[in-house]
Amino acid sequence: MINKLDLVANIEKYYLNGTVESVKWNIVNNRLNVGFVSPNQDLVGRIECDIKLDDGTLGIFNTSGLLKMLSILDMDVIINVEKTHKVPTKLQIEDSNFSLQYSLADPYIIQTTPEISEPGYEVSFVVDSEFIMRFAKAKGALGSNVKDIFRMSTITNDEGNKQVKFVLGEPTSHSNKVEFTTEASFENLHDGFVSFNSAYVKEILNANKDDMTEAKGYLSTQGLLKLEFKTETGYSVYYLPELQIS
Image (cartoon, rainbow, N blue to C red; front, side, top):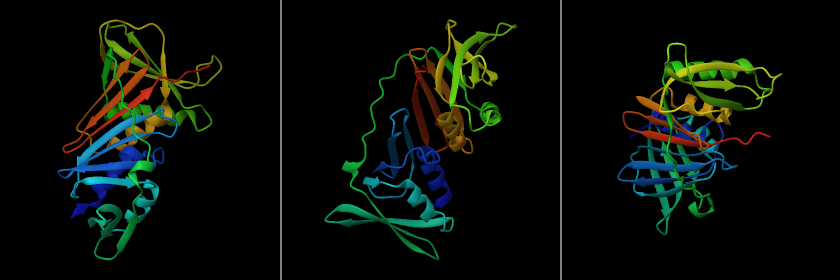
């Protein structure tokens, strides 16, 4: 048996509300590993979690279709992989009421996840429920007609505490903006801002908020943001390159 809610929650961590549709599920020793990349290659990530399936690589071409099928099932499901000439072709998914067939794609037609050459990260900060709430409120306050941009900079407050300042909104003098800060660790202040995609971060935080046991963010002033989440049995990590703003 597989708990449907756990499975869906882990799928959502790469699907990110429709950001990523096509992935390869790599299963070894009842452990699922999924690398993924957004269509524009401006978001790369990986998730790991436990899953009771035989070893193999499964091509999931349309994750949205799989989620819709799972939505009609009870909490406990049985999943088996149907093979033709030893090649996985379908997922057989059952509960007490329904039997579903989800067609698998050839893994070779699905984009390979790029390898990330990680630089040194000068800045780190904790991602907790308070941070997630602040980011969501700031993003929501600006509405849907604002470009999906936020900027990060390092500061020290009046008490001398090191912080990261987040500024959501377009970087023009006449644009609406929302700012907030969070405690951070770094050696030296960095002059200027580094910009990233706020829509992606919103979806990442929303997908991971319910079951995370530990989460941190890491900023490289060379232009890379890393967000890392741990659960009791799983792991997810996301890499966002700096936005080039003209």
